[in-house]
Amino acid sequence: MAALMELSSPPAEHSITHRPIKFNITDDSPRFWFDEDPFKTHFFNAFFTTFPPGEEFFVRSVLYYRDQISDKKLAQDIQSFASQEGSHANSHQDHLEILHRQGYTSLKRENILIDALLKFMNKRFPKTSLVNTLALEHFTALLAHQAFVDSDIFADPAHEDFLPLFKWHAAEEIEHKAVAYDVYMAIDGRYWPRAVAMVFATIALLILLPIRMSPLLFHDGLLFKWKTWKNGLPFLFGKNGLFTKPWRHYLSFYKRDFHPWDVQDYEFIKQVQQMYDDGTLLDIGKKSAA
Ligand SMILES: [Fe+2]
Ligand SMILES: [Fe+2]
Image (cartoon, rainbow, N blue to C red; front, side, top):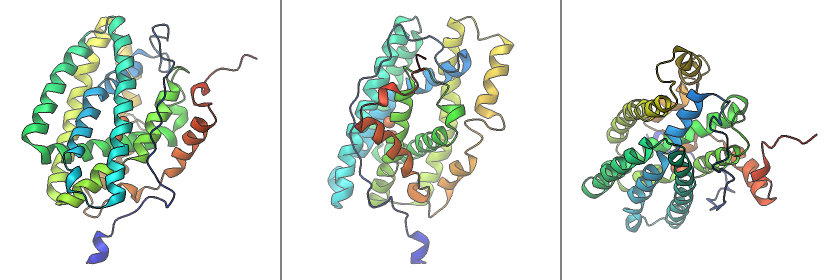
């Protein structure tokens, strides 16, 4: 039976690197920056701007257990995880401020509520907070994985101001995908709480995202236009949709011996690391002048 619970590992060269960066997203960046499509853009606007309160919640949830972790590598990974998620939250907050100035004011109001709710959860239900964190981290890791695998559909249509943020965040989500999971395995590890948390997290996301998207589409006068939904829904739920295509990856979380590194996708991080090191990350997606 011991083999059943043997967990996968990242490659030997794996480490979690903090890569602070200032992106080129400004008030002059195009409003419909993803595929020039309002639905797809507002899906990502709604999703990305949930990260500031969401990722701060992840960090609090994991840091709460730091003192109970004796494994030195995992303790170090917790610190690096917190640094990465802190930078992600800041970058997406910058984007949120721009959206707010453009008149999409619902997001900030919603974030105040989300932040208060998540802080309450951290305070009153630290274990539930942790187990929901690892469920949501599975989501970010699988969407990041899919964005790299189907780069031409899910990442490359992003405008050049946004593409570096896309790639950077996706790579780092893959890089730290096992931290919350490993902390949970070290302090508890029971199967059912994490399976239930995943069901809960899935339902919460499926409810939250349309709630956040609707005022954005309404602001643009597009919420009740059939064309908006006809073009947009297949992008998420069609045959090759962002949510439908990785269903196997999603379901793998429900296996009793699941581990995030069952999927070995470290090569995606290497691509981004290379661009970060040689200073070309902010240039990706720039159209040739020729
Ligand atoms: Fe993140
Ligand atoms: Fe993350």
